[in-house]
Image (cartoon, rainbow, N blue to C red):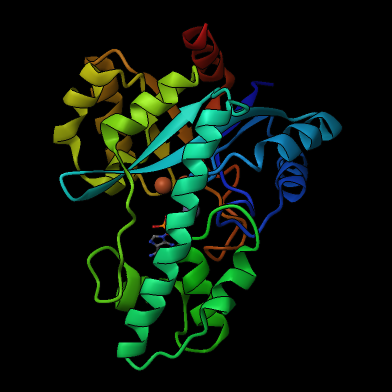
Length: 272
Ligand code: AMP
Ligand code: ZN
Ligand code: FE
Ligand code: FE
């Protein structure tokens, strides 16, 4: 049978409800051969994932999803096969994570002005380690009964541009590409169909972008076709994954978007 990979999976070290062990156990249960651990701005989930991967016989790609911005738009940059043990890289990530904590307090303050009195500690209870973000905040709001669904938190309060949204002081997209290249990783533009800024792609390619996430939970077939074309035009590698957050977004998405193992081999060749 053809080997399958899901190249976009989160753990509890960012905003999934699944620990590395639970992620890999689930991957093994549904018959995935390979997954990439892509937590937001943090690498701490990689080591426990590699260990669990050994135990369950699932190949783990060390990766990251860096939050970045270009001209006021949020962009996510994936980095595959990063040298996650690099200490300068880890220090940079630690600063990004500190800023994420501060931003939660800022969003909690804004929510107060809208009559939503949430204690910031409720958010940190859900994150506990690694990087904290809006999905934790949304889940805390849900848990405390301020909203009926996690999605409602984004629509009413903390979605991009909404009244209680606070942006992250993040890297520029070009800096994100540079950081990934510095640790010998392969920079890949995450879910461009969600970000909606195709006009930036050519400049990313000039800056060293190597791939594009063509297949993704939020890319309908026509969107995936469009990015297949763009990948071909710029000779970019193609990746794809579910962007699974455990139960963080309601249902477990792992394995619902996969790519054939040949694309993993192409990533490996590119890294060499
Ligand atoms: P942050 O990195 O803190 O800005 O948070 C971004 C996270 O929020 C990502 O995991 C997104 O997938 C998630 N997110 C964004 N919009 C929604 C939504 N409408 N429902 C659930 N999760 C969302
Ligand atoms: Zn996330
Ligand atoms: Fe993302
Ligand atoms: Fe993601």
